[in-house]
Amino acid sequence: MVDFVHQYGLALLPFILAGFAAQMVDGALGMAFGVISNTILLSLGVPPAAASAGTHTVETFTTGASGLSHLFHGNIDWKLFARIAIPGMIGGALGAYVLTQFHADDAKPFVLGYLGLIGLYLIWRGFHYPPEHKAPKIVEPLGLIGGFMDAAGGGGWGPIVTGNLLVQGAEPRKTIGTVSAAEFLLALTVSITFLATMGLAAFTTATLGLLIGGVVAAPLAAWAAKKALPKLLLVFVGVLLTLTSAYGIYQAVA
Image (cartoon, rainbow, N blue to C red; front, side, top):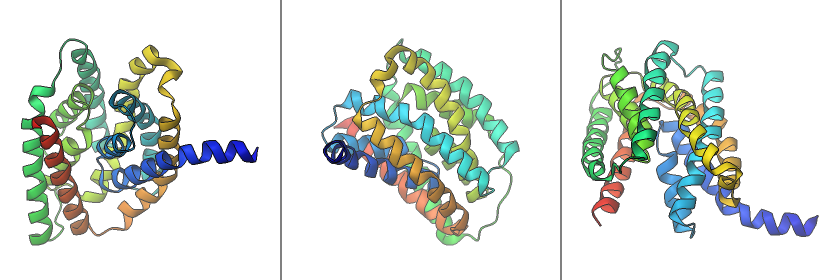
């Protein structure tokens, strides 16, 4: 028993830490679990296909845990949830279908460039504006586009939906919690087809470690989103969005 724990515990530990770090950022800021976990897994030597498969499989569980945690902390706006979740599921289903027909990689640099500008604006807004909030007017299209890009382009739900809602003046805490909770339905919709084709082969050592770390981090991240100052959240989201977009553009053009 000791040898089993020693052998498999050491193998799982890097992936548990990766899942914990990725979910802490994603749950607290509403984006980047896929980007961060994929980057960490690739740096640890996991093949790209396995890293992508593991991340998308695990997101179904981590977003569920994150959604429940945000619900417990009162971070969810249910009216906003309905307005983004349903279009997000439709967009995700369409994106999964499109992915089987052709690749959406050519559009990635343009989308990432746009998101990078959104990030810079949020940083500026966080430093110069008081936390005055107003209800966003453009919501459903963001859910549809975010869901589509997440499925067809390998990511984008958090940056597109969270970033654009915050630009419109939505309250950071409720926006992050709501978008994180709605992502569960998106991840479930996209992952059903994925799991049907791969089965339990998707659950490698990497995915198990990411799952453990992500689920453990989910309640801590939701608590952090509840306690953080709105202006601070704006700046952090802006920095994260700018850095991840810049890294994505570098990968796309390199």
